[in-house]
Figure: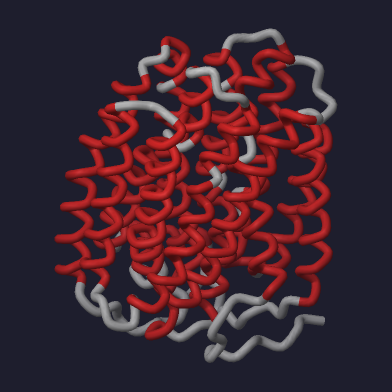
Length: 397
């Protein structure tokens, strides 16, 4: 029997939903500090080992529209529980792989399954939290995901260095299983009448503002998510151990969590374009800093700035994405997440040869240059968009 729908006056995500977001972020970001160790253990080059990350990110992004449509048709919680069970199986199998090719294949499967968690969680918040306070609830969710990032880049790197990178995959898989079981107690929100596949996708793609937000998400994913794993490898290229490199880049998650608390307060009075401008400025400065010089100090400072950029800019784009097509919110948020992570997969793959050659100045310098127009377009676009329209029911079948 379907659980009763929660009221629209929820002010924060349910604990089990936040825990699933934590685990999804942990699994996604744990691989960065482990790439060098994976390359050494499997006797491949760093550029080849990067496929374990880029393949994951690409599958994570490409799977988003599918999960969005499925959640619009079959419900948020059933889809998320099924995806977490799939991620559990893929994660456990990843830890057993003796060579790179099957490892990459299973990481692709894990990425596709974990891809359901964040967009479905965002959609759940959009379904159950009123628009005036939605960004604060989304910030809570993002803060929990940030903790997962911090633990992944810090604890994950230490565990991989002291024990084995395989243990990290097992840890994430078992946590995913626990979340799948815990989500059974989370009630399914009311979604109104369910339209067909074409109606949901069409309702999204006809919205010009939705297309702009998707484009911004793609570029944001490229300049941040795609290059974030290279902070750790840049340090390791300069002789820093995986454990120390992981702890240094964990500042990103810590900074994101702390600054998300600040954004939650500021969002009550600051307009979204101002939040985006502050976040974009931090992204530019972070990339420029590491482009000039790579050291423990500059990497930690850049990681902190990236956390601030994500807190201010991404939370605003995220909130924007929940309002651009309210009749098919699950599909719209899934397209947004797909653009974000497909954007992140491209430079993650393309940057492998540059990282292998130690050309980190060029890698981060290009990102700094791209972050400037990204910020400008996002600020102007959000200003022209104005106040989000009221929610509307899903399109008819």
